[in-house]
Every structure is written in structure tokens, then in C-alpha cells.
Image (cartoon, rainbow, N blue to C red; front, side, top):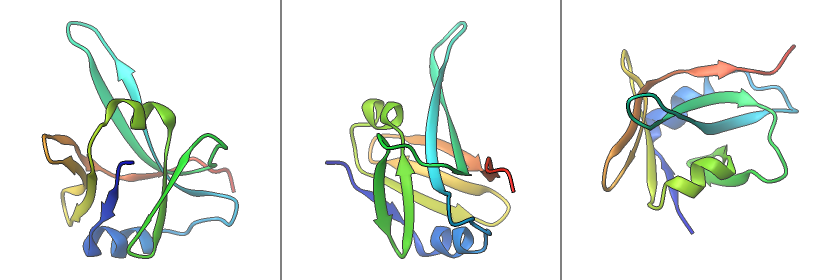
Length: 107
């Protein structure tokens, strides 16, 4: 089973967001193609689905969808840098950087 580490800086920043009771932090990926194929990542406050996988670290709960887990076969680290946003890295590559949290839950 893959592991997700949330750094102190990332956890501190995530705690600063207002999160409705019926929502959670969720990391998803979307497959896109054209001349080349790639995944785009989205970090959001969103409704979790039954098939999402729960990860908890540093006091933060974050869900990943099935597609994201299916193409990432390594442990991940979510980090944050002021001015650069969130960054998702594994041992073999940087999956994405300059992520910002989007709120997809209607108030």
C-alpha cells in the first residue's frame, strides 16, 4: 500500500483553509493527451466518494481517487512552499508543483 507523507509546512497551510463538515481535502488526477500524454493534478476541498482512499498524516486527512492511485506506484510527499504552492513528489519524479487548493463544495 502506498504511503502519503504531508510535511509540516503543507499541514499548516491546509489547516488554514475553511473546510465544511461534509467535505474533505482530495487529490485527483485527470489524464490528458494531444501530442503527448500526461496527468494533471487537482488539490481541492471536495465531497469524497466511497471508492476514494483515505490517507492521514500530520493531523490532516486527504483522499485520493482510484485513477490517481492506479498510476502512481510509489510513496508520495505533499509539501508546501510560500509563493510556489503545493508540490507532490515521489522517489522517482515530481508529479506536480504550483498546486493551489480549490473549493469545489457549494456553500
